[in-house]
Length: 164
View (cartoon, rainbow, N blue to C red):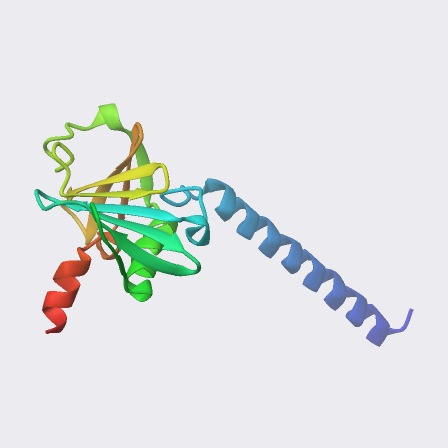
């Protein structure tokens, strides 16, 4: 075998080994990742209820590709971009999960929660910030996750007040 062909063969084998190692690393990282807050895709959500502290809850329903705020007797068009922000919370990457009974829920602001976000039939309860970093506690069922503070919901009314 000529020397040039032999070098090309070794180069090809090296590239294949590196590709296999990269594929293995990516699949290993995905398998060990804690996942997202909810298993549902944001585009599959059709109902949103947002409760902030003691303020009345805001109810939204998606009809014909648009979001509507629904009150007792009225229905008004909602800001689709604002609702898209709330929907993205479902796909927020979780840094870690722990069983809810491993925390004192009152100490981390989950009894009562700072905010409650119901997406379809799944409820997210938001607590206080963690002691280190810009993260917040979120209860989903019987688990508590830690996510970035940027995923903490805010009221659509507070957003419109700030814009004025």
